Image 1 (cartoon, rainbow, N blue to C red):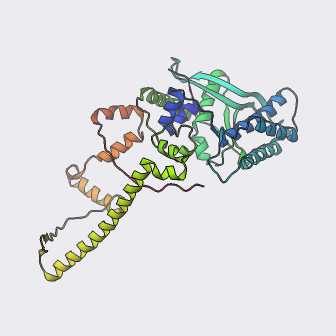
Image 2: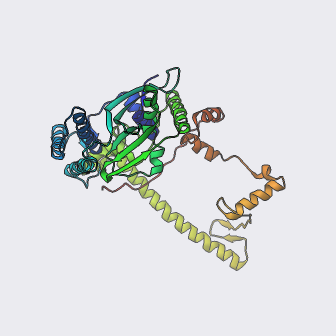
Image 3: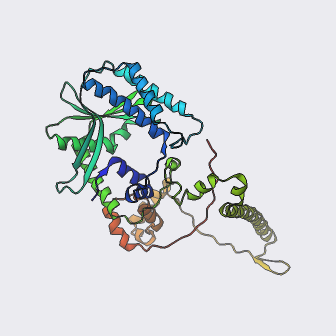
Length: 398
């Protein structure tokens, strides 16, 4: 079984197909997002800060900012760094990085409130006694405080500030804590600390033992699921715009292909023409349906007014059939619960209840239940292919 990391597991959860491209097929792309580029440069600067401190040298803020700019220029390549959000230039991101470092320096200088044990500390550990579920990770900074608490620090340059609940449930640093305490069994108290540098905000969490054990079990179940997966299906989300494999993904491949075409070739491309034709016909269909519904209503009104059940046309007859059926409260209606309770009381619930098969299908597709339960349900399922054609408008360029 391969060695897993948080980023590897997280990639699978976000998109199994991207996971396949990256970790099964081992496809490598030179291109990377500017958000990842920014994060690397900021991490390098903070790594230098604490490495120098470990060797007795305290960098000035100016030295650190100059180092960041030097690393930015040294590594910058406009051909391989991708900017998705076109409203921002490379200088906007560079300025954000400089601001992250400046704010961090101002907040924590002179950096003597704790003892740095290690910078960029690699952890390699196992989640089980049999050494089957192996995990690797990299701690940005490992700290020991004066009161004996060990701290795992992680630096984030994300443009989104999460809630305390989200960081409490974040698996990355929880896994690092498991690895830390396995590497150093004498470590008893651990605090997890996230530095959200763009917001000059620090969030911390102390994990309960039962939470860490649940995380251990969930991670092993996820690894089992990955190892058993044969078809790695794409999972579309807002993250697709940042994906390096759009030219291979069935959900993005055509968009990628036509994106670079000149206007004339774009309009002449077979897929573009088919979609445009289909959309045009669907618009006509909607217009016809609206007209049809209006005539239907007029015909019903005519039959009622004339008190007839059949209306004759030139060549056809129209039968107006009125059926009445009972309509019951839908889910969410406060009367629905009372209705269900009454049916239970009179012993008639089993006659009217049924298994929601569509819901069960969605649960399996979206992996809402745990892996073991899914495996028990799968033998009851017969896979069928359903082909539908849907239309949606393209997103406008930002």
